[in-house]
Image 1 (cartoon, rainbow, N blue to C red):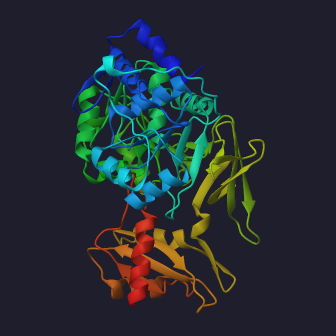
Image 2: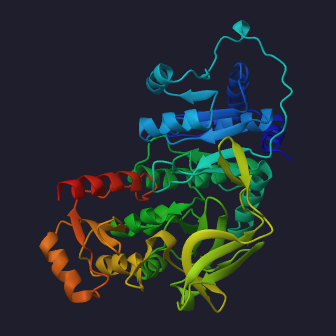
Image 3: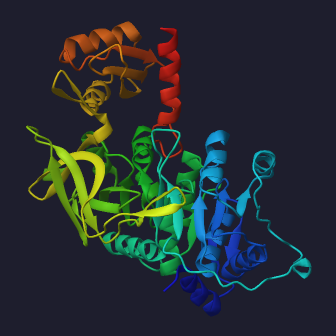
Length: 475
């Protein structure tokens, strides 16, 4: 069954029912269908439909249109640097672009591309017949990446549906539930919530302009029952001492994106009496494991057990108690779209995640990213250990650790970029000398007013690398 068919079923049954609501407007099934039909009147070139836009109803319309027309939806972050966007459009030969007029003018000057319009006068339009060859790929999304060339991830329509159904089962989401989306709609987590709403015929609330306090107001006003929280949002709830009554309509709390500190998990249990989950996953594999914080307190520092249809193994590093997490899953992506073709993964084999961890008593423990693991004079250094110490001891408000390599030095040099209202570079350096082993001590210390992060609170490593390169050049 196609995603559009789920929508069509409800459209025929109850066209005037409100399906989607933003902060500003309600949209019935019929109104959304009219928007889809208007978009369909465009003259399409090639196999892609590309949206580069702030959160809007158009994400929903184009998502459904791609299912209807057998097109590949490409979701790009409109806040990304223009050079990266234009390079992505050029490299992957993206077409049928929907974006703001401002971005359209910039792309027009640089590239000759076809842009989609929202037509209002149907009498002027000519709808041509199409016989598109069905592609395995339904969605092309990009990893957040740590470079200026994020990887394009190809996902099938069937996998999008299976991922949504898996989450419906894991978190006991019901048809009557009201779902709220606060995250950017180009992100796979938001698209999964969209798909859950389409499959269940649940009402969806989405935010065009994210604001933490408005997000909570919408949960309370609409009596929302389900969402995926970014872990930082839950930390903000605790920090702002939000009253439990604001969250009482939610059937559970689900934390994603980054692992919650143990003290925050314990604090959440004090203000929310229903189930609290932490899930571990990645765009390539969706949800991998889930921890039921309430009933699995003995393993509270883990990220839970693998969900149904998922198998895990650890490829342990030599002489180490940790290794790379590998996943075999029903929900794996198709592969990476490189040089205008799909480089398929072997779905029968284990997929290397690039994450580091270990398994104990069936529970998965996540310890960091493989790229945050470095050897200095043969000694394994886990940069996340340094990060955790600085955060737990409240020496910094936020920080990122990375390493730099050059021809002048045999070993990589650790670099700490931090944000602190309390301490300066000398204070931080002295703390590191007293509390870290000699190999863990960063070589470079750079203080920033704000650590660059995106709306999902993930590190903007592209910007961070630029800052480090600039500062090292002047040192």
